[in-house]
Length: 338
Image 1 (cartoon, rainbow, N blue to C red):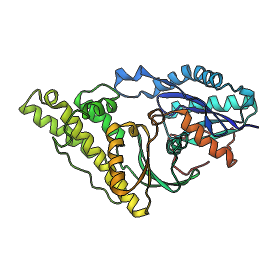
Image 2 (image 1 turned 90 degrees about the vertical axis):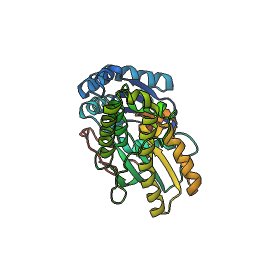
Image 3 (image 1 turned 120 degrees about the horizontal axis):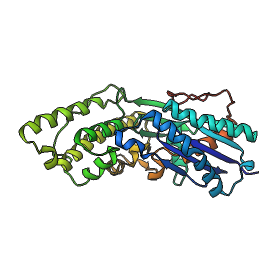
Image 4 (image 1 turned 45 degrees about the horizontal axis):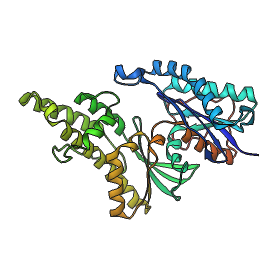
């Protein structure tokens, strides 16, 4: 008998479903939400409503394109957290109801662990143990991965996530939402050393990104007083300098973690791992420190159900099921398996 799992992701503003069969991802259906663009950020209530609209069509498409009948599903998996509570509720409630109707087991998945395990969707895959730098709009973490079911957070941000810093600075500059990808494109044409911004100093392997946001705000304010068109005239250099600073802060801690643990298997995950500047820099650092580096396909960087399906595959093999009393958790730490 094949092991077929339907996975559902609804933690923020992407509604996604995926089917995995015997460890092989068959599809990754994603419905994005453009409703948030005019607000310059994700509006939780609108996200929840959009999930309600998108979820059934997305699941239907995932099952249809996989060629697997719902009666042949071995389990239904879902993101339990972390994420927006209303958005999580939609996915969790649907998954529980769907599985109950089919008399099928359910598997809860930690969204952050799923980002890490996206590296096992395609070859080559990291060798255990490895260190994963997980960077997104809501999280910045250095994770020691001993096996698919055993992870330890070595360090994380104490305030803003790096993706949040990218988006907030983009907004200050006047770029459209979501700002990170726009800033990345402009940065590729600019001089990363044109302007200097302070690096936050944190103990151990902790990160802080609130300081650079404030520094950029004051820097722009002071220069606009002298030159009203300062941003327009220096846009590419500003973007390149900001991106260079943020990536430098990430790399400093990643290098420190690999040295402390004596590990040369290194991966990046999360939405910001799609950033071209970060991808290029980590490959350059790999040559310097003899790392084996793993970069996920861009479609598996942002929130998606394929990564949830992969995480569920490992939990299914270990017999790690949950029951219908499970409820979503907006804050769910790595290593919490219910």
